[in-house]
Length: 179
Image (cartoon, rainbow, N blue to C red; front, top):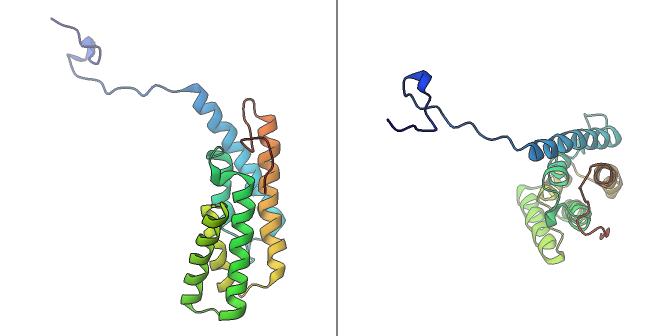
């Protein structure tokens, strides 16, 4: 009788499901990312508002995923992080100021942000939500400072420090801070 490595003689020849091999290195990396992301988003949310602010940027959550789980992607690098968020927020503010708050204005602002990010090589997908926040909440130019710069800056600083603490990590990827 041939022996099948996926079956157990103790179970009367029934097949056992394959047990996924646990890659300890990936789990270790994920654990570092979880802790770093938790610290980063907590600091950002603490700095930008009381939790009830209409300008509390949900896009900071998406940015946290890029900075701590997709660190090596172009979209996670400082140029895209800052350029995408600031450009998207500014486009939304300008669109509201000159065109109002109709649905077509929000759509126009999002598409304009997408074009801006592609042309300037600052594509950061979470920042695509910023013009919606700006138009919907009738944002003024002061919103660029808080929550945009403060929120994004705090995520960036935690990611920068975290990558120096974490063994083998490197952020930004090329070690040059390009904005």
